[in-house]
Image (cartoon, rainbow, N blue to C red; front, side, top):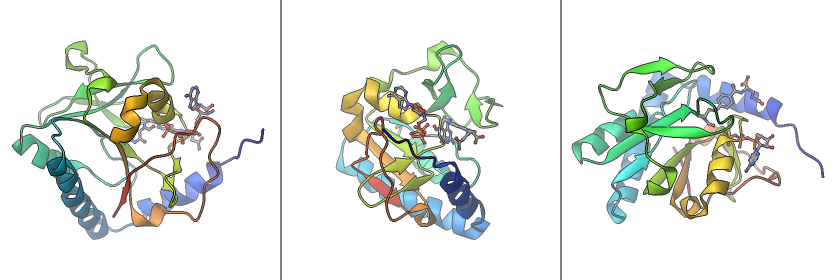
Length: 187
Ligand SMILES: Nc1nc2c(c(=O)[nH]1)N(C=O)[C@@H](CNc1ccc(C(=O)N[C@@H](CCC(=O)O)C(=O)O)cc1)CN2
Ligand SMILES: Nc1ncnc2c1ncn2[C@@H]1O[C@H](COP(=O)(O)OP(=O)(O)OP(=O)(O)O)[C@@H](O)[C@H]1O
């Protein structure tokens, strides 16, 4: 079995999204917000697992604001304190206190009362570094989302990958552990 080294491609794609202007970032996050709203309205979505954007990632903030107006509960990832390679999802609201984790990503301060099991989410929004037209995805390289989707197969069809257009590549070769996405929104 050959494993492919995607670290160079990851760097390139991260640089593309980092180079978007503030206006392009804002426009993309607002377009994404509209598309995610349509997705939520076509189904009865009450609990969402998203993420706090960093390093040029497409922002979910306009969408979170809409969710809060609609009483839809939003959750974001926290690195598991002792189960390496795993994430917890904690409730996220406008007043949630945040800290930087070891990847310098913002996350809520760990409070077990705010954790929701991944099987409970109506929608999982997965941040992408790269994607192709058949749903193969490239993440940050930690395997966090693949591990989570492998542990909870019903979540696979409730997962939507999101990215900027500039993160699309012609073809990614899936690795044996990769779980392709059935839905990707690129703005
Ligand atoms: N905003 C946001 N939060 C998120 C994720 C994400 O993609 N975006 N994650 C999604 O999983 C998890 C964090 N995953 C991460 C995985 C690896 C690295 C990282 O820095 N990796 C090394 C090596 C990368 C490589 O092999 O190329 C590095 O960049 O130095 C950072 C975050 C949870 N939170
Ligand atoms: N289901 C799994 N069980 C155990 N290890 C896994 C699983 N999925 C992925 N991994 C491991 O995680 C590592 C990183 O995987 P990969 O490069 O595909 O990450 P990624 O998909 O880019 O990141 P992420 O899922 O965090 O967005 C690989 O070395 C792989 O062996």
